[in-house]
Image 1: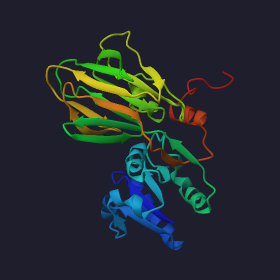
Image 2 (image 1 turned 180 degrees about the horizontal axis):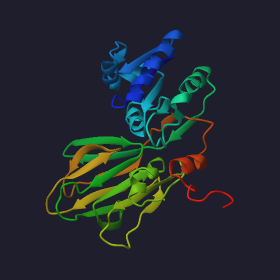
Image 3 (image 1 turned 30 degrees about the vertical axis):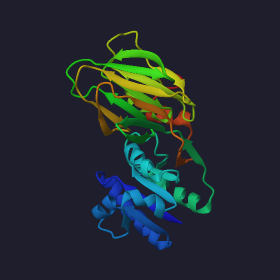
Image 4 (image 1 turned 90 degrees about the vertical axis):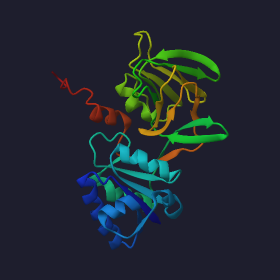
Length: 285
């Protein structure tokens, strides 16, 4: 078994943990490959371009936070991903830095379980070319630097849902409901729920609210504006500047992301610890 390792090189804790991990893997004669950027920072030779890691390795290890795990998931495709949280929030990264070796041992022994997570697929056709993008958390179209409030037109299965005057529109999976969508006022949705949530960003009308829809719906988004260019983001990365009238189609991806599960964590405990639910009242007071 060979491990692909992706490190958040901007975090000293992640780099230090990566060095410890190298020593641990070498002691056990376990094969590993770092992505080229991480390897250059660490000064090691066992590396490959991140696009090739899926062909070379069996399991991915992400050392960082949720952002690093999102980045890693785009290249892992369907290979299992062990998410090690050395960040702050860590909704997606299942394991703490103290649990890294027990997590790897579970994978080696075949005693691990998987959380399979739905992805979004965004599609846009420009002339004769069709481009596809995937996102584990969300697909977002924003007004960017546009100086006025544009209208974002949303259709579900070809039928118009609404025309939102807002700063943008977020289409989030249940996994991504605790990311940008939550910050914009969207609901918390339990993972593996077969739904998406459409969340307007700073809508112009108070009556506009997020809407939860079945994940078998096909969503079309376009921008009604006389001019301008509007950023299309997938998991926080700008993929294209959307022109007025261009249509982006968003639907459930055929490929799932497979995250190695931490059997010592449960979703209710994650919400309490990460969102500090119930901290304002002590039991018995």
